[in-house]
Length: 149
Image 1: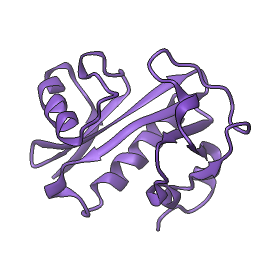
Image 2: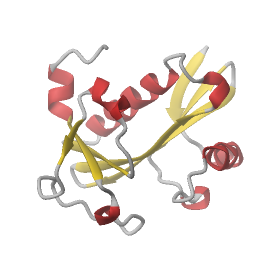
Image 3: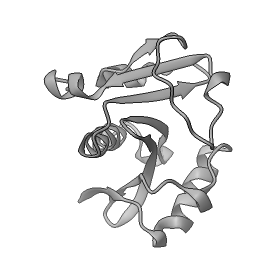
Image 4: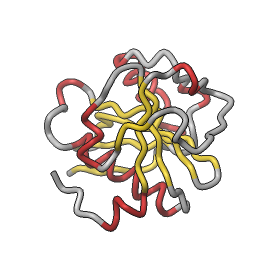
């Protein structure tokens, strides 16, 4: 059975293993966002994702599925769960800041934008000005269009 849920305190050790495996050097599991979600397969956490939320804006910090479990749709489910989670918290736009182009997120309706077009997003944990690629998702558009690719 596949379960996607909000991460709990007892998940920190497994999250730390996953993050180390993924080489997310910008993410400290000890200060993980309260908006971190996990995907479980047969009672084993096989992936995680995290959002930062500020007012009606959010940033996806990362999405990662362990290598042995990739290409099974688990990442898609996790991203859709993040979008739904953000919507329930009245988030209007979700951003992704990347070092490289990541076209994977286009399937959900994310589009590349220029830095002068995105709404200002403030966070103490991330210098967004250093990322050359910015993607944006309008949450209302996501739910008004079929995003099943």
